[in-house]
Image (cartoon, rainbow, N blue to C red; front, side):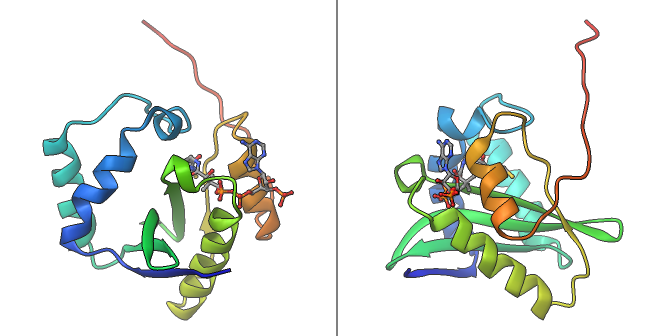
Length: 144
Ligand SMILES: CC(C)(COP(=O)(O)OP(=O)(O)OC[C@H]1O[C@@H](n2cnc3c(N)ncnc32)[C@H](O)[C@@H]1OP(=O)(O)O)[C@@H](O)C(=O)NCCC(=O)NCCS
């Protein structure tokens, strides 16, 4: 499968934005609200300036189809991944995760975690296939 990862560059930020606000992607995020282009740019400026973080564009053939980020959180790195909806369900996400785990190994990262919404079957399966283990339940309630 012709999937590879390359570092995110500044010029990719608009492409990522074109995926980021798609309802199919937002629905699977913990904060499902759309984000403005201004906030998106500010977020990615911080990510690209953060020398402890690693972000990759996922390519399929030569086409950019998604993004996977490894973000330091204490002793762990959190994985966040999303694909353009038209690229989902073809095995690309599972392969991109495998490559991200390899990249993490190469960076000397000891542990990866991911928070996955209940009902996100594709994500759940893609992580399990890559030897992530289901360990925690996460609860929330609206207060107001
Ligand atoms: C999660 C995501 C990265 C997975 O990548 P993907 O390329 O779509 O997934 P894959 O094609 O590799 O499929 C992984 C597994 O899920 C299954 N699957 C795929 N789409 C599915 C769906 N809509 N419902 C149920 N299972 C599904 C596949 O059959 C496969 O299982 P199998 O190996 O047992 O056959 C991608 O779907 C995505 O970007 N989703 C929206 C954002 C998101 O949820 N991000 C995760 C937050 S951490």
